[in-house]
Every structure is written in structure tokens, then in C-alpha cells.
Length: 404
Image 1 (spheres, rainbow, N blue to C red):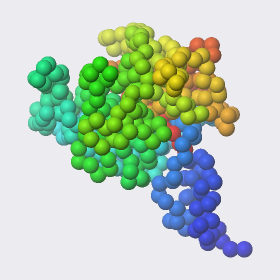
Image 2 (cartoon, helix red, strand yellow; image 1 turned 135 degrees about the vertical axis):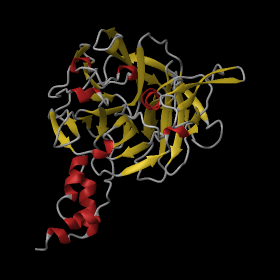
Image 3 (cartoon, one colour; image 1 turned 60 degrees about the vertical axis):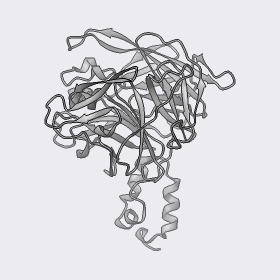
Image 4 (cartoon, one colour; image 1 turned 90 degrees about the horizontal axis):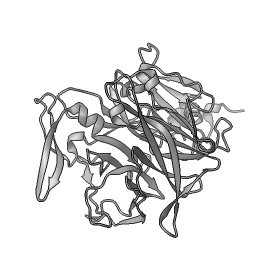
């Protein structure tokens, strides 16, 4: 009998393709040097796997971060030095998008980082978005001259600090495919007006995605973005959804609308999610303001409402259940998975983390954390079992990672 290290490469690749969990794909590479050298550095990512919560640790000498697995309610230490001093702004396909939490006089760098393989990809800096008129490193707390509003043909700009632009004006980043693909598109919601921009790998600048709604308005505020069936779907705060057929094809980007407006409730944000059956749902997240450790009241999640897209009428229809699905909402690319293969998950539940940027505070306390589970059946909120909070749990805000 031959040695394990001498298995034919094609058989080794077949074995790897049979593995479902991302962690198992990492483990197979750890069997021996030969297997590690013959398998790709970045495991092929399979969608619709379970999500882990990535969070920074406070003064832990063994590791800088941890991964919390809600299936077994355990945390696992993760040495992730590339994420130190950075804020999470999105996650897709097992990668996280980060920006620097800095007051330094240098342009804000944006990276895609794989927390398990430590592969890292640099994206265009924050000063390469179209809302930035000028970046001046020597102007402390006023480094950015950034678009404020438009009145007729006149555009007004305000001065903003690097830290404010990083935290409040860079909202969410998603990817169309794993960044190991040359066709990967990266799309961001950015700026005080929650606009859209995109770039490709090796681009030098972020390109805007200007669009108009059915009334001809261009001042549109986007709540969420996902890639659904290979196309970018962008959700307005009003509930209208735009589909981008061919990003980069021209000024119009071949944009179509597939959902009519839904009356917006006060104090809520909306998430766009592809369910496990391939349909689209919109999740309305409602807040209530409570006193906290800061001077101003802080909004915390009070409930969720779920709407399913009726493709025939292009309207949102409220539903009371998502069946056996589990939703993961936050700054990650919104995700739905079936609970059936995983006994640790409860169907018809929503796992959520904080997305309210004015809530982010290095002085926040554990009880201020807006993180938990919502039961759609009985409309109750609960903490996540086994998740230990510490001061670093709130800064940077933790993020769900799809460990496919």
C-alpha cells in the first residue's frame, strides 16, 4: 500500500470537491506538505454553507480575533494580524472587506482578506471614490473634501476627517464571485447619500453607478446590495429594487426595476436576501432608541418583518415565516441558508449583528451590543447562546463570514 502523500493529484482534487465545509477544506491541506502543495491555496468556495461570527478580541495574548460557531456555540481563536486596526465593511465567499480605523494622514486603504488563508487583495483607496473632490493628508481632521449636496448645477462639498469617512461614509462592500476569479466585481455603498460604486481587481479607481428611479430622481439612498443569479440587485430605502444587467457597459448599465416602492416605516433599515429556494426576500429591521453609555440615545433592534417578492405583480408581500431557512444579517452580504443539514440551527430565525454606524463607539459597553437572534414565529429576541461579549465585541462591529 502506497503512502497517503503519494496519492494521484486528480484523486486528491476529487476528494477535495467532495468536502462541503470550508473548515474541512482547510484541514485536508494540513494532512501533509504534498497535499498542501497540490491543492489551490484558496479553496473552491461553495455557497449556502454555515456562517461564523468574526470578532476582534480584547487584550488576548494568544490571538487577535476569534470565530464563533453558532452551531456548537463555541469560539475558536484566530490569529488574524492583517485585520488589526481595521474595521469590517463586508464579507462574501469567506473573504472580508476592511478599511483602516485610523486618524493618520494617509489615504484610507481598502483590502479584501481571507481570514483563514491570509490571502490579501488591495482595492482602490477611499480617496478614489467619485464623491472625493480632494484629499489633503496635512489637514488634520479635515483630510477629505467630500460631496455634500447638489443644488441645480452647483455641487457643495464639506470637509471631513479620515476617521469619519472610513466609518460613516464607507458602508458596505460585496463581491460577485470569490476574488480568485478574474471576473470578480466589487460593489460598495458609500457616502452620506448611500450611493453605489464598483471596481474590478487591479482597477485604480472606484467607478460610480449613477441611476434614476421611475420619477427621474438621482438622489437615491441604498440600504443593501447583493448579487443574485449573477446580477447586482440594489435595494433602495423605499423598497424598490434595481437590477444591473451589465455593469460597466455604459452610463445606463442596463438597469431595470423589479419591485415597486413599499411604504417605509420610521426607524428601520432593509436587507435584501436570496432565500435557499432561489427567490428574493426583503427583511425590514426596526429599531427603538434606548439610553446607553453615550450621551445620545442609541437605536437597537426591536423586531423584523419579512416580505417576499411576487414576481408576477413586482410587489412585496409580507410573510410570517421563512420555513426552515436561517438568515444572517449585518454588514455581510445578506445570507439565507437551510437549517436542515445543520442540527444546531433553528429554522425561521434571524441571526443579526450591528449595522448602525453612529452606534459604533470604542467606549460602548457589553450591554449596548445590538447582536442576537430573532424568532419569527413568536416575535421574540434573544442573545446568541455561548457568545461571550467583551469590549472589543463592539469595535469593530463583528461580522458574519460564510464558511462554505
